[in-house]
Length: 164
Image (cartoon, rainbow, N blue to C red):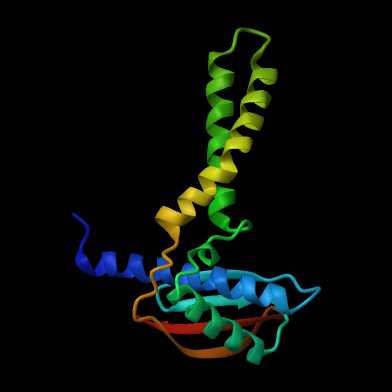
């Protein structure tokens, strides 16, 4: 049985993951020619990319407001690591099954075809996985506590601290 505190932590990560996606989506619309990446945990989320701290603060505040107002689609991002994980898992599994069940001499073509078909199915399954498992657009009483700029290995990153 999962402890109540563990369930709360998972819920916090899911909300922060949704806020991260929404913040990056909003920032991407405001700042040109910069690659943005994110990572969430139960305390908030990181935004990697050379952007001004004020822009991250503004985007995070807008992300929270828009998710609070019901714009749930902001919680889903096409370049989320969840999509990559789902794609890899589906393609690898389909390929292995096809390789094992194919007749002698047909394993490689069957494996490649199975992997390609799995990749076609992966995007909608990845979005479903984000929507139902890895993010939550129900931000409730979440709030942005602070945004701190840092440098790590020559890269600019911001940590957006949240409370829920």
